[in-house]
Length: 95
Image (tube, rainbow, N blue to C red; front, side, top):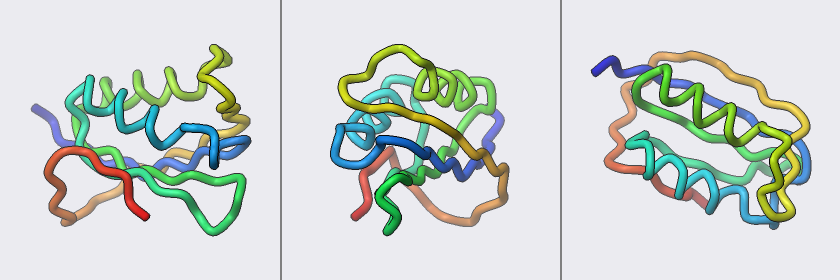
């Protein structure tokens, strides 16, 4: 399996509306490792996704779709491919 790392920023109505739980559930379904956390900025949630690029891109597409995910509204996504030495087992919400 190809291991890729992406730091992804989700902007919009993304804090306090269940986006982190949604990311956790969907990443676990797809076997993606990493983490998700709220930023100090109220309109930003950040995530580190580790796994196969195609599966990560499918997850990002799902999250940014205009399909309703409760009260979540993702207006913009910034994706940065990166190298990381971070050891992550599974997927977690960070605080």
